[in-house]
Amino acid sequence: MTTPIGSEAVDQELIDAAGEVARARSHGDNHTVASAARARDGRIITGMNAYHFTGGPCAELVVIGAAAAQGAYELDTIVAVGDRGRGVVPPCGRCRQALFDYFPGIRVIVADEGGKARSVPVSELLPVTYVWADHQVEEE
Image (cartoon, rainbow, N blue to C red):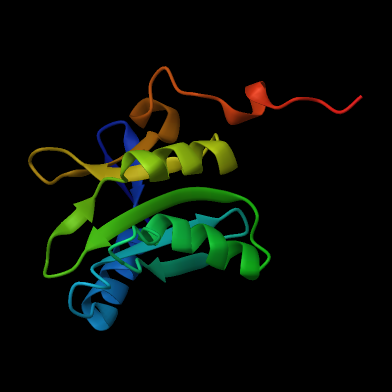
């Protein structure tokens, strides 16, 4: 399931699952990135982006919804893989914030400049972050 990369372990099964979805389900410009996440219970949940000129959800956001639909409310690790052999792609800023808000302890698999995969805490991808929960008004 995991392969040591430096001092971190990368969930290769997640990369492979997202890669398979990207290869099998990419369709034109509307569906170009797949994502896979490992739930705390070990399940793998996958999803595909739904591009639309109004924005549309990224693959990582689709996975969050798919996981909830399957009763998986705790995700440990997530990765996104691009179509046409682009490999591991980093989450956009909106996804980084959403992942942090939903799962502050989640690890994200990213690739360095050489294409080598590594697993990092989402907080490392979003330094000096806005913490949504800190700004909610408590009901009296």
